[in-house]
Length: 278
Image (tube, rainbow, N blue to C red; front, side):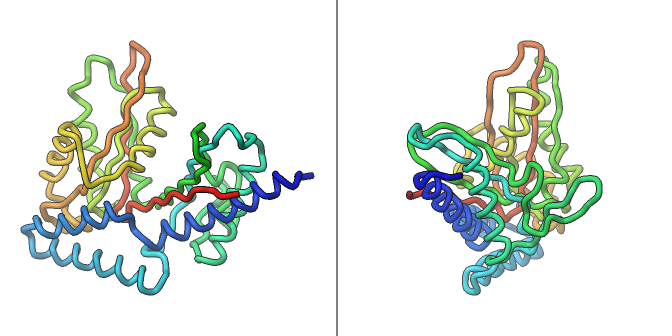
């Protein structure tokens, strides 16, 4: 049985999760919109210009109508920041799931979550291991959502390189996009994880997608330029803009390994953060 304080936390987190998911699937973050607008200004291919113009129109219509900007509203990937004043308990996970169920019904979200083997649909985007929730300590109580569609997720890759293969990292990232071609609805954002462990590097790559994309450091820009030289272009139809950005996140790793992961995200790089007030 929940205490009054626990009930308050539950209600506040469930509501914040709902609002974050609603915001993420309807309103593209300003940095992503700026990156797309910048792509239009530098695109030389007329077909690519037309596709980018369609994307911008799509973004505007979603905002005007208050509906999801893509029919694939993804699976819910959630990041919680928990301050010391909030007890870590199952209540947090239950509250996030409640927020996702509400969003599925009210936004609405497409029910995407199924059992991996029977393919039975939960019909509310929850289930064993869903939402995928990552928890970290912090000073503010926040919930961040990263809806992840399947078209881009399905072409993501991981490699366990050798320490002597540092120079192969860029090749692996570019190769990932070369294999993907138009499947992830480019122009893409590529989250690159380097280091950690087999499972940890995939998490790093996904977390890299939470970073603002309208600025890249020199290494990220170099990789992004290499990807764009593939000329896969918007929607795979050719052009200068295959990637809007490459974002990298690193962590320490074993002396004998060099894990690398690429988490591909479509042009709709959706994310939103809401502070939980209770």
